[in-house]
Image 1 (cartoon, rainbow, N blue to C red):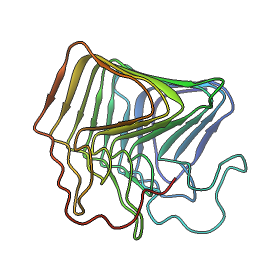
Image 2 (image 1 turned 60 degrees about the vertical axis):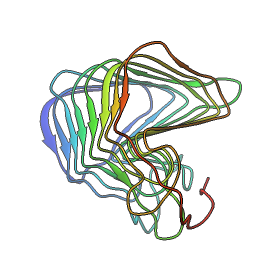
Image 3 (image 1 turned 180 degrees about the horizontal axis):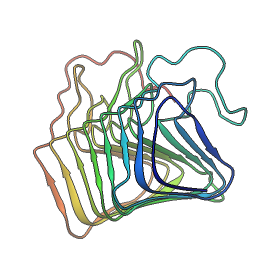
Image 4 (image 1 turned 120 degrees about the vertical axis):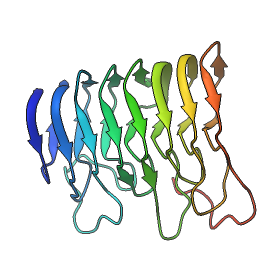
Length: 222
């Protein structure tokens, strides 16, 4: 599937395969599930593509599509596949528990992949009325993540204001993680939260992120 030009609002895009998003915009969408769902495929976002103002916060009713797992979705959700960001902007999106803009899930035997080599992920949030959020910009579980050029900035949630990586590797070669924070409630990892997997940083910028630990609402929801 190719998206190259239109502006889409309040439409859910489901790809059981590959999706290339290179121009136009997906904005101001609030549906019972992700705005974009890719299953067992490869999503590439590049060029002048804009993903802005989309929300899964406070989603209620029957979730869609049928293959979606409860509590495991973000505005852009990829299951058992690859997410490549080489250009474009993801800004002002809202997640409910996991991933303010992007969530990628794999499994122990076949980790998913996320390659971040360009573009900007900024001003995204995760907010839940009871549980701490994970991954203000990005959340991954059983995925191998490479940051090599993308800027991740001004995102917020309690655990991993910029990004949270669970059960997978995070390799930072270039790019920037800056000015992310833990939002209105205290937490851990203003810039990055990495758990159960190696973290390797060879170059790039991590700056002006902050987290405070005074009052934690509940344990993180998984």
